[in-house]
Structures are given as structure tokens and as C-alpha cells.
Length: 227
Image 1 (cartoon, rainbow, N blue to C red):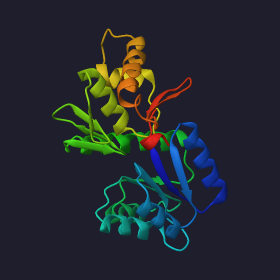
Image 2: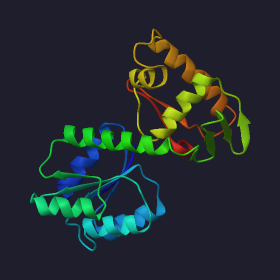
Image 3: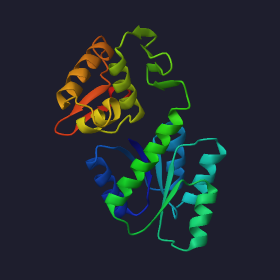
Image 4: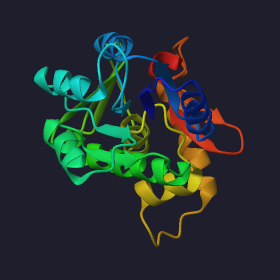
């Protein structure tokens, strides 16, 4: 998952960035609201994690700015303000979730995963998934890269779409088995590795930029442009 983190507290920001990267997320850490605003304009993220009391531009102002531009990326607000009216104000401004400081990183990770699942449902309402130079047409089960058609088997296509929907996020073999083959399947984890190998050969083989990456001991991830 690619995350924009906006937090002005050096200690908390550094610790949060470290913990998120340990979970194999890609994190851009900004220390004030204006920096975050510019990063959001220039980049593409799966979720924004914003502290309420940012200098230069508050997290709440940033939420309103994001939503005014029809940006529907999930937003998680972090704050020490625990009054009910504050939570209501943040959610009404356009935040999707709200966490009170101090918080447990396990809970932060769980909330980010929940926001990611919600975003997945939104993806399913669109027939086309485009990341970098790769485009997947969901209803036609077709894929192109740099305008060139790539012939994939049905399971290879489903695996690619799963990785693309979680771009930047490491998915374990067990997660891929669950999401692509389904619970209760008699397929083994070796089938995941074998399908990944075939998928890489077709999608990445002819290209210098490798999008489907192995993360040793953890699983696989899709990175735009092989970044």
C-alpha cells in the first residue's frame, strides 16, 4: 500500500513511518500541511494518514481541500482530540476514519487494511484498472502493457488484478491463495508460486521495468514502474 503520512511530531512520525515500512508499505512522510498538500497533488496514494494539528495547514483543512478536488482516496485522521464533536467534525469534513493518540500500531494497521478493503469494493465498480503502463479490462479479462496485448489464463489474470489492487502492499502466499483461489480450495501454496512465475514471464519478461516483485520471506507485491 502506498501511504501519505502527514505528522509534525518528529518522534511519532519517525516511529509510525518505521512501523508501516516494516509491514512493507511504501510511505511518504510529510511534516506540515502544505508539504502534504503538494505531495498529494503530485503523487498517487492508496490512503492518506493525517494528523489534525499540522503546522501551515491543519489536517482538517487538508481533508476539506482533498474532498473539494473530488479526490476519494481514504483518509485516516490522527489526533489527541477525543471529544465527540471533534470526531464528528472530522468525519463530516470527509475523513473516513479517526484514531485517538496514543494508539497501538496493530490497530493502525488493522484500520488501514479495512480502508483498503473498502477501496477494493470501489475499484470493482470500474471496468478498467490502470497502473503505470499496465491496463486490465475486468469484464473482458484482457491485459495490455504499453499498448501491447498480453494473453493470460483466467487465474493469471485474477492474480494480476489482485496484486494491482494492492499495489505497493506485500501480499503473502496465503493471502493470494485466499483471494484468488478462495477459501476451502485444495490448491497448495506451490500453485501460487507457479502462477506468479508464469505471470512474470508474460507481464514483466519483455520489459526492463519489473512490476511483480518477490519480498523474501513475506510474499509478492506489484510496484508501479518497478519502483
